[in-house]
Length: 398
Image 1: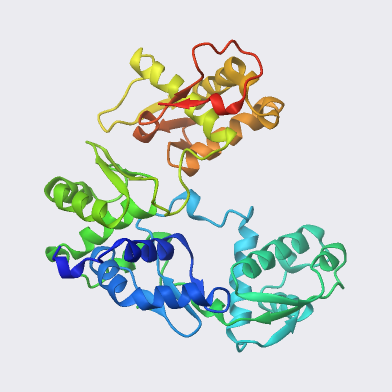
Image 2: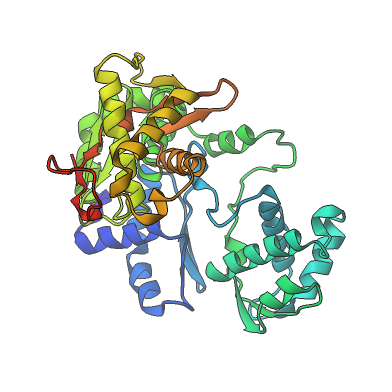
């Protein structure tokens, strides 16, 4: 990369990190930050267009970096949602807001009537408590994202009774929540069509698409695995390894690790991009203990590594390992995890491992793929730990 294409100075790096770390920056919520980032948008746009192929939306309402992943991962969903119906409600709500002007108000009953008209049936039967609860969860999410504000009333009234009313105000930000497509999507028949459209009419021979994919995969996900996506992506890492490492490590406080079957963007102390692992919490400690036991299994040849650095084990055996960790080290866990039923404990641990791409569950074969990222971290208690109630701060990551 040419020097003039790089963003210079720590401040510019921080402003790019802010855009990477947030959905958007709303002028109405943080005017000072909005103007600070807007001053840097020109230089940031050069970088993200060249390296990531990402677009920046910049207007009088907000600034947003469009972060479209190469490979959709489970953790990329909306964490507050627990059902497919909530995503349906969100899409219909966005349709409803599309016809509203900024600062235009509406009451909850207007929304529910619109949703019933668009999608009649059980899903919009508001006498059903589950439906009301799901809709409120969606509304709380859009309020938290700054797409609407509560002007009067409380959604608890609707949660308790279908006649409960709340007065909302549209901010106008919802028009920028969904991505824009350059093609008509009405003929798409599967999820893969949406991903392929990102590389439509891109000159593959010049390597733009391949470079964009590699940078996105490193920045937008905890790990980049050879078995996922295009084999060309790892060919890019092979040939441009040094240039990529220098570029990213100059731009961010990070280290780039590239292995035979995987690659990682490891954040430094000053880097603030997304969630990090291990966090300062008990669940992270439990995962580190599990990784230590997994490493023992592999080192003792009880579990075998494949050529791509993956380790495939039966789900029953993997769950047994987690139960063993709880039994062996549980007295040092926080009260929540000490007293958690075994089945719930196992599900919680596997869900967290999946979220950070340490493992992948294969429901059809009842197997678990342990990914190479799980081999980069482990933790253990001090040698003088005797199994009594210990302070959680004694967890020592290695």
